[in-house]
Image 1 (cartoon, one colour):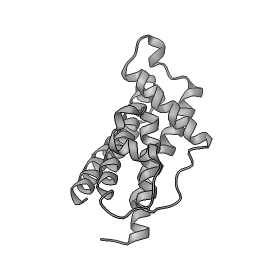
Image 2 (tube, helix red, strand yellow):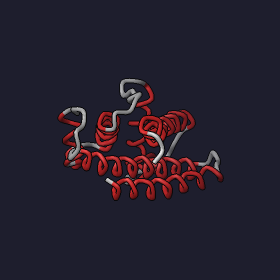
Image 3 (cartoon, helix red, strand yellow):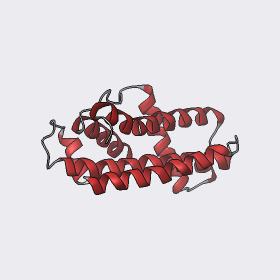
Length: 167
């Protein structure tokens, strides 16, 4: 678990630094919006991978039961979409580490986060110029979704510290 947690801390710090550097140059331009979506998605996916690694190690310990999808995504993420991997990983991590409140995946925030991840896919694999465009209305939705999902990821260390105390 120490190795998985150390990797989480190192990767997390670097991905947060990328986002903070981007935020220092904030603008309303299309290229800035595209980069925000890309950097946010990298942070989210990096955190999710580290959480999957830590959760997999926790299977050797006594832990609360998790659903079949949560267990399967930890063992073989390839059969799940990006949004499903993130959702089930977060749910499993909150359960396995016994922290609350579990993110609400039934609300508008999760829908916006899913839309942001879909837009990241079209930005990374564009087929037309339209794939690269982010309207003002869409930008608000993507920004809100990214912010909510990043908060869910970044809340985990403080919730763990609150529950289990400082090392």
